[in-house]
Structures are given as structure tokens and as C-alpha cells.
Length: 123
Length: 123
DNA sequence: GGAGGTAACCTTGCATCGCAAGGCTTGCGA
DNA sequence: TCGCAAGCCTTGCGATGCAAGGTTACCTCC
Image (cartoon, rainbow over all chains, first blue to last red; front, side):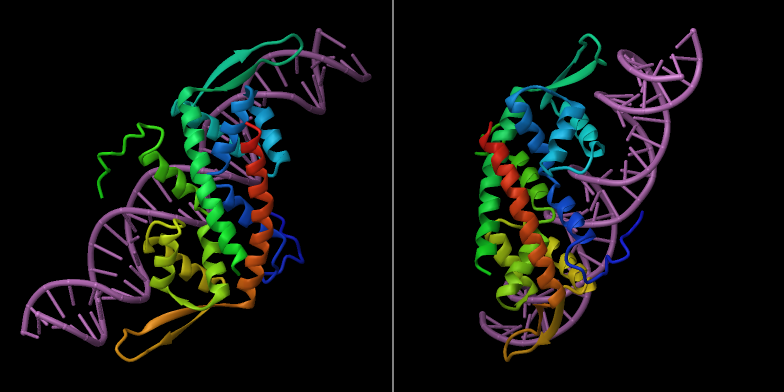
């Protein structure tokens, strides 16, 4: 796995930063997916690309297992859709359960992020 | 521990909420500890109590293993301090490495939380 | 018509993290 | 003396994100 030669241990940025970001995303990615689905239905790769663009996930390797979990939990429903000249795509749609979970998360997120912001300001 | 009987949020809230919060704290707790130590030195239980009060951790069961990790990584230093009539306490202090890590985290946190906020607003 | 690229799906194995539960030691007070 | 609380820590568990790899279908180019 190719570590940068100048990626010294004491370095504050570099690979350290990716580790920090990856841990920060734990528990976030799940609800970012729900938030995207609240706007409109998406298919898997579309979700992954969008989230990568926003810096909210590193690859589809996180998204597909997550979607399977959400489906098992009843937070999303899926359907296959076939258009001409395009491979069939599996679309994901939010359920009522998923909408409730998203609303719960929003509340928890506001509380937690406020606490963190306060802590960082007080340094 | 048991569940509160008046926990009538149904299935969307309740125990689910604790699960959501616990996952959200992953990767956060570590840097909240660093932020507290940036203000002044603390001993372990003091940190744990403060963080529980802010809703940033559930118990000391997360804090002590974390402090050991931070010490191994060189982000904090420790010293024993004995006062009269008080049990000896192990105090934790931030190192230069820890300060750099905290600064890296602050940057990542702002980016990530901004993205999440934007996502939640656009629903 | 075949070869190759690419979009889209998914699985496997791993490292990490927070948490509950429990244990050990020391000092104080009844 | 006995019990309780403060303060330290360890162990086992479940959940999460990630890299890497594997599989099909569609289209294009020779």
C-alpha cells in the first residue's frame, strides 16, 4: 500500500488526515445516504459518486454494504429500472421508517455538532 | 439499565437514538479529549465526567482505552500527582504532536460538518 | 462477428472505534 | 474493623468504513 516517502510519523497532514476523516465518517455516511434519498431516488453508483464528490465517503466499497443494511432494516426499498441503451439499475427509495430515522439523526446531529463546535471554540 | 417505560418515541427514536449517537461519536471522542486537554491538564475520570456531561461519550469505558492509545501515539504525556487527602491521580497533558493532530482534526471537522449541514438543509 | 472497455452491481477480509461490564487498589468515615 | 467511594484499568463485543477483487451486461472498434 504505497505510503508516501515523506509521510513522516509526526506529520500532521497527509495519511493522518485520511485516517481522521475516515473515522469521522463512521455513523455519518448512513444518514447522508438517507438525506440524499429524501430528495429523490438514486441508484447505487450515483449515490457513491455524489458522496465521494462531497468528501463524505472514500469509495463505493462503503456504500453497497451500507445499502444492503438499510434494506434489511427496512429504511429503503429498491426497484430495478431498465432504460434503452443503459444497463439495468437498481434504484433506492426512502421508506417511512427511513424518514423517521433521518429525522432522529438530524436531532442528534445538531446536539452533537453544537457541542463539538463549542468545544473547539473554547480552545 | 433497562429502557424507560415512557420512551414512547416508538421505533424511530428510543434505543435507536443511542445507537445513532454512539456511532456518531466514533472518531469524535478522540479529538474532543484533545480539545479539553488543550485548555488545561485533566485526570482520567475528570475527562470522562466532563464528556459525559456534554453528551460526547457514554462512560469511562471509552475514555481509558482511548487515553492509552493517545499515549502510545505520543499525542499526550502523563504524570502522577499526589495531593493530601486525595488519591493519587494520573494527569494527561497535550504534546506538540497532539496539538498538531488537533489542528488537523479541526480542519477536517469544519469541512465535513459543513457538508453534512448543507445536505440536511437541502432536504 | 469477436475483443476490449466500461458501467453497474456486489462480496470478502481487515482495522478501528465506542461501549458495557467487571476487577483492582487506596483512603476515609461510621 | 468494615463498607463505600474515587480512581485506575482490562476484556469481549458489535458496528462501521475501506480497499481490493469479482461478476455481469452494454457498447464500440477493429
